[in-house]
Image 1 (spheres, rainbow, N blue to C red):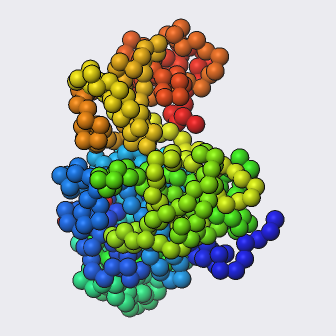
Image 2 (tube, rainbow, N blue to C red; image 1 turned 135 degrees about the vertical axis):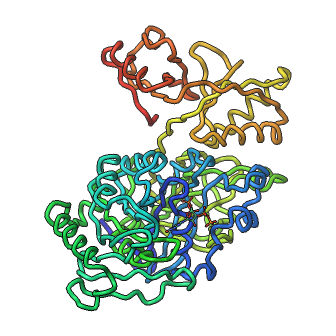
Length: 533
Ligand code: G4P
């Protein structure tokens, strides 16, 4: 295979593109902000946070965002640090959790999982983690808030291993927590990094490092803490998994770091180690086989997110794409595979810290947002390769909330159907129909409940259609993978619903997991899938 050389290769090799996953309040925003401080992208703590202030300056494209003080769509932050060019993909949390959150993970080469040390693995982390493991990308763990009372270290590691099914390898080990937090022990260097609260500085001050055996530690950590540390380390060395870069790269072993994002302790150690252990842009599967950015010179990218109506007056859309190979220049012509024609990528944008700006060039690993006149769909491929190819599609993620939706004014039927279909095409909602029924009534499924509000708002504002929505009790959806099955004859539980998606694929809605098991027991050979491929 020919190798990509020169400037393009150099640029791609220094790219690190990752997503941060966590349960709300674990400290993702605080950690991101500290990363940006190291990258010099912001010079004041608090610039990212601004849930109620700063963000609006750049993303006031939707009333709903302003009203609620949240960002409905995720953004990308780029900065440089230690010779790397870093792209952080933000995965929104709280109630603005949506399918976009999942799709963003499809554009990342690795994930950083932030866990609150007093809580262990929480619901949202579990969901996002599933998508990471599906892709076998490396996962790094930052156990945050060590300056507060934390769970026992072994318990935390056990929790990750048993809840998420991934082996862990602590790179450092905490000494105490809360008021007793004294720092972390670096297992490889065999020295203690002493905790100091450096939150006031813009970057971490000089962290004092002392070898474990040194008498310098006397008085800094108590005899009891030292004895406990030695005991724990001995236990961990004997029974825990050893660091293995190969397993880390395959997403089978998660290196674990302890720290406190708020007080800025352990953040730079984490960033430095993480960047060295994670990967440059990874090869991606296409219908022509794996496309490796180090071998494919041509530009190629896939669309993973479409953000509608950023400017209401123009009704325009921005398609966010992940560049997988080659380089990009503003205004270049590329071939849109699904559309079957050449398109010019105009008005390319990138997010730098919290400001949107135009980009002139970008490389494999980067994310750009381009103006979309309504031709792109989630999963589309764009390329300049002479030998064309399509990247593997993005799976449809299982919605968890369902509602029956109908228009109030039956005269507005056409607009209703048009609006609902367009919004579904953008990937903000999924729509279903009852088997053998028309579009009189539709069932809308969403990953995050906020999408219901977005749907209502957009139908009213953009399509002038008022709707009524009745929540349905279903929480689980399963696509039927058997092609030779007569769905009408399936016997399920009484609270199960048979529907089909936009592509006519049959699926089942369930109220609880028990019903799924019962239905499988009653129908021998039935194959159900959580994702539609
Ligand atoms: P998120 O993005 O994951 O939702 O979490 P975020 O960073 O917003 O942090 C949630 C809360 O936890 C914030 O407090 C934040 O200051 C705090 N926090 C984050 N990291 C640490 C840490 O290492 N130690 C301690 N003690 N607290 C931490 P808040 O009171 O909700 O917000 P704010 O008023 O501080 O902004």
